[in-house]
Image: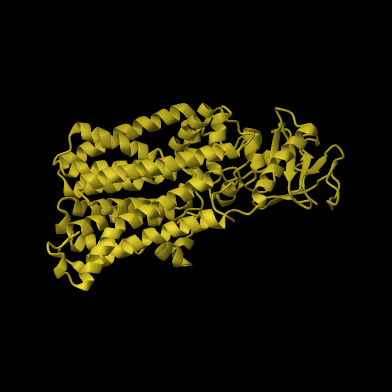
Length: 53
Length: 479
């Protein structure tokens, strides 16, 4: 990502984009953790398939 | 479910691929690697199929572990491609959340892991100039692992070959083709020696002739195009070609691979019974193209770059939400455990009414735990495959019910008191019950008096013995 050397000169859209990029690793990490948890959750279910009917 | 049936064959000492037209009439549709891995884990844990859910659990654990190892492979690939941390996470998140139900307990997970390693190895060799013999042999080994996880691996193997043909020199292509041929012939020879070439052909080729259909593309665009992200295809192809100079040597290769894999996936997904999982290799290439573009276009093309990044992150978040909502919060109907226990209780009742260790059982209906708890003693478990089959496999169902030819088949179970057996266009009737739960009504025309029926449990399983009829009298269930 591009972080300007002088952050104070950033416009509002640029600041928003920079904040969004900074948040992305956290968002993606959280989403993946939730998805992995969901996969682990269904392991013990009694079902011939993996989809709820 | 049919994957677990394959594992059960191995547990009972049968070869994975047997003759589908002989007892127990199993059809194993996929290449063997996932079956053998799951079987090895089941054997190490000392599990038995009389409690079949334990095999499902092992199967799901193997699949999830394969998915997690694949994430590690993608992380390493991201490091090799010099992607930023969040782009590596984006690539991993896209692939993990795109892997829907077919990846939870089927060969697709191990297959996808092998595909990721295979594609990663191919991408690495592109940056090294000429392909050495050692690298060619490594690629050949991985291509065999891909193909022997699932037959549709032929698509990625051809795509990489075409990529080499169009982007590298002839020597590289020749060495790649040599490695692929060598290892695939070796693997195929070993499999044919183990199970017999006729059985391998009957299961892996004829067992997959299911007919043509394309509901995934034609009828509900929300599922493939929006829900599963098939819109990424045109985006990745546009970017892969229009901005190919940003990716250096890998661009044309990735573009070719994406197109070949899309065509291959589209063709193979038109088989009845297939799913969007056939597009996963294509999506892997598309995801690599997209994250490479986002990484390499920093400082230029802000609108396209930010828009694509935002859209891909939104996909990961939406898919993760879907996973959590469906599998954690929606949960499963409470009667699932009751049904499971009813199925197992039905077997205990059968034993109480004379089921011997050498007797075989036919269960009317599809997807019952009884089939798996009985293992290879349950005949013709894969009725859904047989129903869909357009080949000539197992079409003469009279063989199944002929006491002269199949004397081991003694019991028939049905959950419906007015059931009859309908296989393809044949309907088998003539059923005499000897015991059933209170309230269950059988409206049968009585067949031979020597045949007896059984009912039990909340599911009202009904049973009949089959072996006592006169020769040539035919099958017995119905009303």
